Image (tube, rainbow, N blue to C red; front, side, top):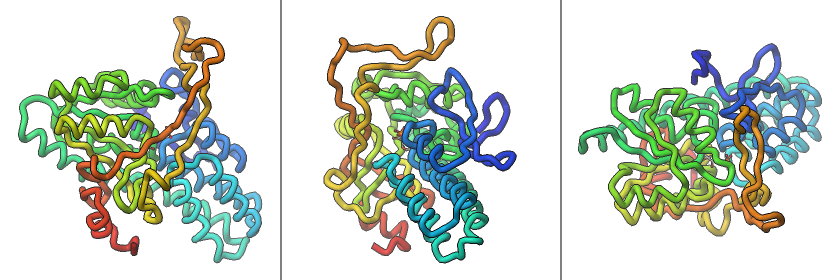
Length: 361
Ligand SMILES: CSC[C@@H](O)[C@@H](O)C(=O)COP(=O)(O)O
């Protein structure tokens, strides 16, 4: 995607360095940083310099590659898997990418691992871009179908940031939106602010503005009201882990949007790259580990002050205890469909298996 007419991915290699956009400062400051050793990759994922399930996976893959250049031994490969896997618990793309790197590297002699690791990490990034492009092509048909049945723009509500910043490029939930705009279909996006970290207000609103997409920022509690008044035609969200049964784990608050959508007959779609499917899990509520983050993210908000400085302010009384589960699980029964790189399917085990028979479950 372009920033000031310069095309960017969210992670890339330049002058032999792995570079990322440090998303903690967006949209107020655009900072690029280089990650030079394994510990920095772990920090960048854990402290959310990068975030979003596919980008977490891509960053971990590059973390393995950088470590293999420093120490390609078996012990180093095993330790790197553990160190990076421990950074964030919910997005399955992290484990998927680490398993994929280990599958490629473990059979090789150590002397061949650095080059092979860099090649596979680069390929994982390229594959992510193509997967998300295809999700856009598939999701475009969902939007086109709605556009054909109504006058005016298709009003789409999205939660969190499942945009290009959460992937390597295109985004998942946003890719159908970008494709619809390219196809000349009018679209208006309601952007949930997505407390506590405000990925919608900070990142999705920035993406929408950068690409000239008509949009309005809404508070997290407004979605149900807009749906009751017929102002939302479609919900599209991303996911951090979707089970073999079609239960969808995504940013906290997604479940409430799905309930409101069901109650109001609004289609609720999930944009789903196949590496985000956890075929080993059937019951999302019981089995998916939900990240609990610091209460400081609830008691404080970050923003820009009058002089343009990025600051954090406390919004609750001193010492208020806070609870901060970062994700929730939307049962498959509330999901209208999964928009995958192979097309749209029901959030249902048979349909998912038919779409991805190689999963072998
Ligand atoms: C294509 S990204 C899908 C999800 O990863 C996204 O919706 C989300 O929940 C991101 O959470 P985050 O905590 O910002 O990493």
